[in-house]
Amino acid sequence: MNILSIVHGFPPTHNAGAEWMLHDMLKYLVDKGHTCSIKSYGFPVQDINGIEAIDVLTPKRIKEADIIITHLNQTGTAINIAREYQKPLVFLSHNNHKYGIIRNRRASVYVVYNTYCMKEELRDTYGHLPSIVLHPPVDPKHYKVRKKREYITLLNLAPQKGGDIFAKITKAMPSESFLGVKGSYGTQHTDFGKNVSIWENLSDSRKAYKQTSIILMPSPYESYGRVAVEAMCSGIPVICTDTDGLREATDGKAYYIKDRTNISEWVSAIGEVKANYQRWAKMATLRSSQLETEKELSEFEAFLTDINLKHGNIYADSHKKHWTDSRVY
Image (cartoon, rainbow, N blue to C red; front, side):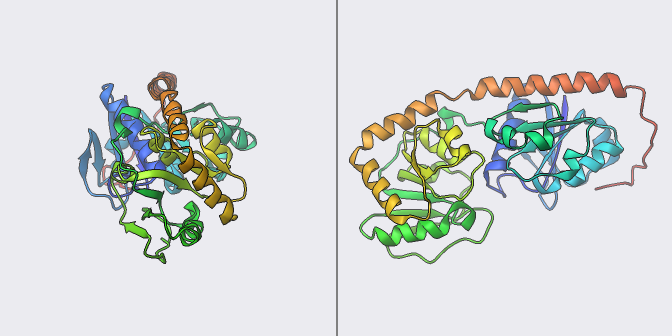
């Protein structure tokens, strides 16, 4: 199959969970012999682990694609192109934002949810569309690192990830050493005391995990929680806000905070995890052993194959519009 992704950003220049999910999905498909390319506006032309990044989206490129994949803020552009060229579109649903253009387009649109809880939450919005659940792929072998128990860490200091809460926690525990890693989006909180080391955004999160004893995730909202899963691959305990997405990601093996604004609750949780570290580390490792990444990716490939077979038959002789090669996006 020839897969074309139309997106707003992509690793290594844009390092966030949704972008890494797409990268790992496409990398799997490339390894299985499929052709994958991305059009990310303002993104340099390059080869990323066999995925071709292109600068100009020509009619020829679109016509050669069997399936178009998109997500987040390029969804409108992608669905309009898919409509023009009569291509099936696969929409990756990472959050509970309701895209009207997806909801109202009933034909040739498919949804990939990042969690079962997200699928349930959006049932009334996208329930009429064929779908599959694919948790963000995380290879336990790739993310398993030898770690030093040096820091209590938060990845992404934006308010969306609880950077403000993290600052209050660090202030309440001046004798502990904390690490804050700047994220690739959002206004990053930078007002910290001397017990906090601040790192710039990382293209490889394993660098942080190597120095981490505990991961904190004080996010007000998480549809999944890839950071938690990555950390657990190295037996790093996770303390996080009690959201449906984080519970599904960690499978009940993290320490859950009921009231994320209650700093004393975070302080108590850190004390509990440190006092019983081996127990919490074993729970984290257990969760990583339960991941079914390869199985889910195989099901995703089969999902795309079925879409391609269906639409190859539907559109084989139905292209009535012709576009000049000067038309670009």
